[in-house]
Length: 154
Figure 1 (cartoon, one colour):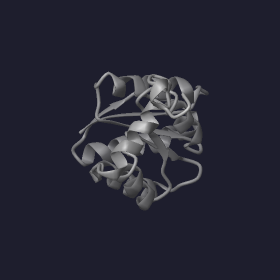
Figure 2 (cartoon, one colour):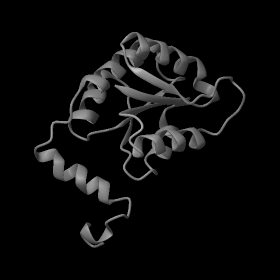
Figure 3 (cartoon, one colour):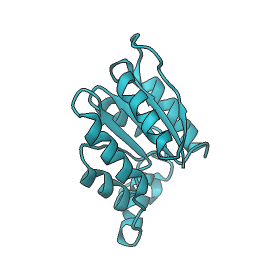
Figure 4 (cartoon, one colour):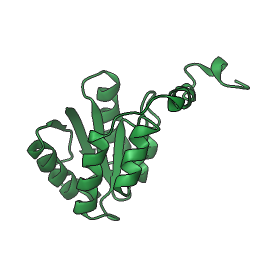
């Protein structure tokens, strides 16, 4: 799988560990940085990574910041991205199976690397279930305003 990773200054160390982990699993990884702990703005990194996803330059994106929340909020502003803050393997599985999440976000200040790597492995191995979830994911996709007429009351 071709993956893109990015972080902010608070999560450089965890991102670097995740890049090593993902390469050991045999994935192709493009690391967008940052490559130092100098202050950066996470929306810039989330936007760049998610733009690559929307241009079909990768299969999924992994974002890390202090909490995972800022990265997820930023990623979800990019049309077509479905980002989830993941705290455990069950959330990793459910966001893939039921929501077809394509961006995994983790908090470097709130989680240990063992939980993150375990959850990330589940995120990458789990397929979208489809079925009754397909219509719901389509409705989420329309919320970005690209098809407002398809939203009830839109």
